[in-house]
Length: 299
Image (cartoon, rainbow, N blue to C red; front, side, top):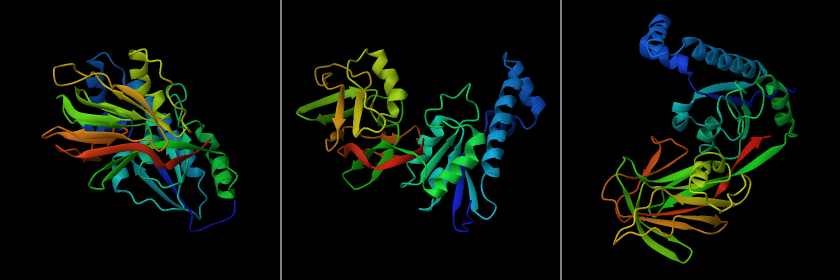
């Protein structure tokens, strides 16, 4: 591979369960005792930790010595400064790609699955041993890329949030979310457990669960299709609140509008990252649509 001193590879990972156990219990023996007292084995979490470390080692070894490199954990993604020419190598679960995608602007993403028997591999489809060949292909510009659709939410004050799987709109606690929903020619005041607006990629996760639970006949969009689907969770019927507008397909250029009727606690977050959220106070309007950005996933 030609030497390019300015190219940077960013390894994205997440601490293993074993590492988090050691952080909490200080030693392996204390962690083992904690698990065994609850009928669990430390051998399982150690095996997953070894698989992750092995995957990271292969990914790191694939980076040319004269390239720059960086490593960032999931919890630090919102503070990490990505560069336009970065190549990302995500080592871990599918959700880690979704977590990173909202901070990217077209950088190619290589997803490596260190536990193919445990992770579905939808967004991390490659074995860690393939990292070197994949990097070579990306550098030469001959990689095959899936451009996956993202969802974008914008508040009326200009704040925006994007996500690969879905945006959640609701109350940050278990209280009911109250809002006006406006979609196509429908207008309705609702009280519910919140709603999600999902992409085709998200159609393999949370949206799929809701879709199956309610035996919906609506077709979920494909991951590369410029379309979204929304689902209202547990809409409550009352004299004031309705339950008619609880799911729908949002095609390109269409907008789903939500006007908050929550005095406090209204929130919007994407892909499960609650720490990086938008506040949704009473009267604020959120407009959700197909995002302009795409995840460039090396297929």
